[in-house]
Image (cartoon, rainbow over all chains, first blue to last red; front, side):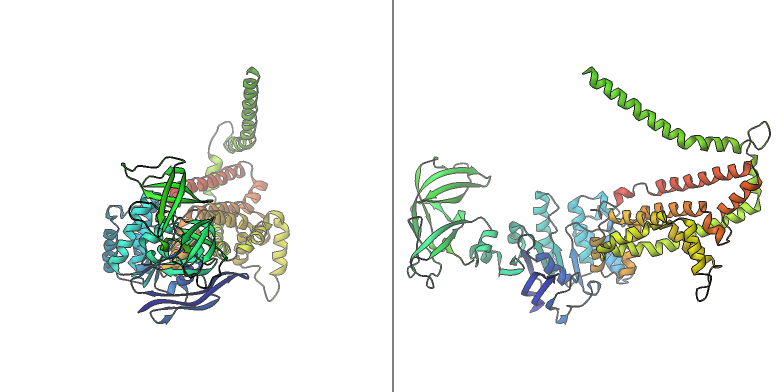
Length: 353
Length: 266
């Protein structure tokens, strides 16, 4: 059942369209991420759900109530900001209890709920501290507790991890996800970090230039991108110019080397120029498991990236990156050596713009 | 090498020279006034002039009124300028420069011109309020506007007004709650600075009170200068002491608030 529905939402700022024809149904308890580059409209869409921006067109419905024109303080929506936005004049406990005070809850209820929340975020010992006495990660956890204390229908998170360092970002995102699952609360998460979106979400909405490019599970978005933008933005991608040589059989020529693809080429003509996209990890050295494409290559460069080793290979005239997992016993080819690599036809994507 | 160190030494000398000159320029008249105020009794230094001042019921009367006008000016100023500066920062940033220009007008319009305009405008129906203390307070609010507004605006600049407002809204707070429970406490130091500056302005302001014929400290001091020798000097020192005490209170209350604003700061 739809918990939050955004129908044909658009937003203009002084004649510039920032969000266009945005449609999304979110189920109760779902964790949906808006992913896209800066200026793609993801934060504006989130702010429209929060009520901080009014849509130029369209409708926002939450639990069958049209909230499109409701002021933000009348929507039961919790918001977490990138800059934490804790009230500097209040202690952790006062920050968490603020929303409950506004709702005129009794002292007993406020005490019980703030204690619950402090336990949830493991900051019981910091209850009487002021925000400036806490680390960034702790402040963001208090912000989460403050938003959850009022039991909102939807939790909105506007790049909440961007201001934190890498390690805390990873641990806090797991914490946010765990709390969201425990409470079964619907959450909308805005990020430009694809790894963050892939790791935390039930579904991802990839946005570009104010429009939705693709909506799907992290698996679908990563493995079956529907547009070139999605393929490029989510994960690393090799792209190369190609020419359709046999549309019926899915054959392409990439710099004189034949590739076979699982992408539908039925609508394309023989000789049509296209661009192929292949993720680096879809290549592997040819062993006994030969896949659809067996390709001669030359090793151009090898870069050690920690858990992954990136090998630059030249197939025909085109350069590709190939990623392979690092292990201490990995026998890497020598620079300039000739090798054979393989990839499945599903890995060779021919995508529309 | 030697030339460089000579230049540095020369630079230091002139820096000290100008600083000492500045200090002397400021403190010498003050010290002279203070010493003069102690000479009420022939041949000895004493606080007799101060005793006379504090025993004078007129001093207490006029000074109490000035304090009252000062407090009312601060209250009215805070009630007008905090919401104004807040709304301009939050919703009407385009109006920031014009409003800043308007708030600076008391610096360029002489008080005498201003007071005659007030008297002319408000001494005939339907706005016959020239005898009301409200007009005096309103006048003081305008005179203290450059200090009060810029202090509040500086305070608002130090916190992330928009995000704090939105955080409050998302938790269900209305405008009043946001203003009085979130914004106001976080610009407390700035408001105090503006308040004490306004207070100092009101205590020392002569023209407005004199022409609107209201009891106040400055007109009384002017009157006393014409009548007595040492007591006005004592009063000048008292007014300095009061102003400095006000500054000290700002420093004291403002301690630690810099850190307190970090979380909501830019």
